[in-house]
Image (tube, rainbow, N blue to C red; front, side, top):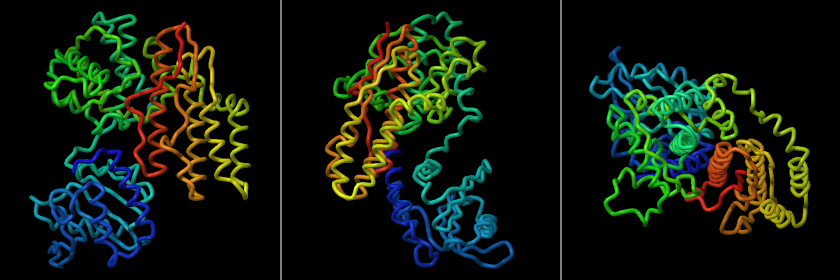
Length: 459
C-alpha cells in the first residue's frame, strides 16, 4: 500500500497518541516498533529483526534491539534512561556489524524522545514523541526515498528572494519579459510551494520530474513546465489517455492561475541548475505573508537585500487587526468558553458567524493584511472546534469542517502583478491552515481543486 505524506503524518499522530504513556523497554518495545513501521505501511518482520545477536570487537556479545540490515539500527531504552550511553552502545554494535550490512541510520529512543543519526552525513535530529508527526519525513529512508537536503534558511526570506531573483534575471536576459515574465514567476512560486506542502503528492514530485525527465542542457525544461501548467488547469477526467504518467500525477488546481496561455520559456543548462536549486529549497518555510516583498525585491535587483523597506511586518499588521476586530472576537470566544449551560451550541453559532464575516483592503498591494487576517481567523476557528470537540459534540461540525474560506476577503489593487500575488498567496495560506486543521483532528483536509477565490480586483 502506497501512502501519501498527508496520510503518513496522520498515522504518526495516532501512533504518538497511542504511545504517549509508554515507558518500559522490555515490555513494550516490540509493539512500539511494529506499530511504528505500520505508520509507513511496512510489515516490520519483513525487513527488520529484534534482538539481533552480534559479537563486539572486545569479544563480548550483545543484542541489537532492532536491526534492519543496511538501513537502520535501533537502541531502545526505558523512559528517562540516558540516551548518551545508548549511543555508545549503538556505536559498539555498529562497529561489529559486517561492512555489507552496516546501516546508514541510527535511532536512539526511550519511547518519549528520539535521536536520529545519519551516519553518512553525520547529521542528527532530536525530537519528542509528540513532535513525531511534524518530523516524520526524516524517516523517508524507510520508504527508499533519499532524504531531502534543504538549503540554509538563515534568513529564509532573503534566500527565497535571491533564488527567484536569479530565475527572473536569467529569463529577462533571454528576452522573456513584461507581463509574461511576471505571470510566469507567480506560477513558478505556486508549484515550488505546492511541492513542499502536500498539494503535490508525493512530496518532491516536481523536483523528481525536473531532475529525471528534463535534459541537462535545459532545452526542454520550458516545455515540461508548460505541460505541468496545462495539467494543473485541466480536470483529471478530461485529460487524454496517452498523457505522460508523471504529468498526470499533478492534481487539477483550478483557480484560474494557470488558465491564460503563456509563451514557452527557453532555458539553458545554467538556468536549469538554478531552477533545480529552487526546487530543492524548502518553500514551506516561506510565509505567504512575505511574498509581496519577495517579488518586489525580485523585480528590482537593488532591493534584494532591503526586504523590510516596503513590507509591513506581521507585528504591525497585528497591531491593526487586533483592535479593529480580532480582539473583540477573541474576547467573545473566551466568554463562551466559560458558559456552564449551552456552551457547545453557542460556540457553534459563533463559529458559523465567522463564516459570514467579510473583509476589504481597498489598497491591498500583495495582500499582506488579508493573508494575516485570514490566518488568524482560521486559527480562531480551529480553537473553537477544539473547544466544541472537548465536550463531545463534533456532530455539530457538519460536512464541511471549516466555514471560513478565501472568498470572504476582498482587495483592490492598481497594479496587476501585486494583485495576482495577493490572490495566489491567499490560496497558499488557505492550504497551510487546512493542513493545520487536519492535523488538529487527525484528518486529511484539503481544498484542491480550488473552488473559491479571494476577490482581488485589479483596477
